[in-house]
Length: 165
Image (cartoon, rainbow, N blue to C red):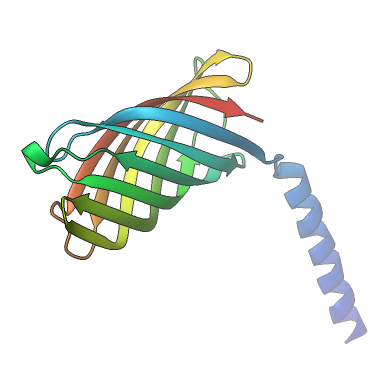
């Protein structure tokens, strides 16, 4: 029994040391963005994202708002999503590519009609090094909205400034 405990302790210490050797410190970043939601028509979108990344995996929270266009039947859309990112571990030619997927809540408003429910999103993009910790971020997302929204699938593109800290 003592030998078994000793072996477990040695394995635990070894695994901990291995993780310490291969892990990298976490880095945080924040992005302010402007873009366009293209469903059903192009409308301005704006928002922010705050995240933390390890070597290949990152996590972020994103809030975005798209304006309403009553004349075209295009609703205002607000989203708050938590996302997981899979990204290249280092920049390649000054660019760090990523794929993202997540879930959260949305609120859609068109005139007196309103729907609040949950949704998921998938997408990807690139962070392009500009100067020191400042990067340009280009992103494309597809949102799948649950409940009874006017448009169950919504597309958004944006460009933003990203600051790593």
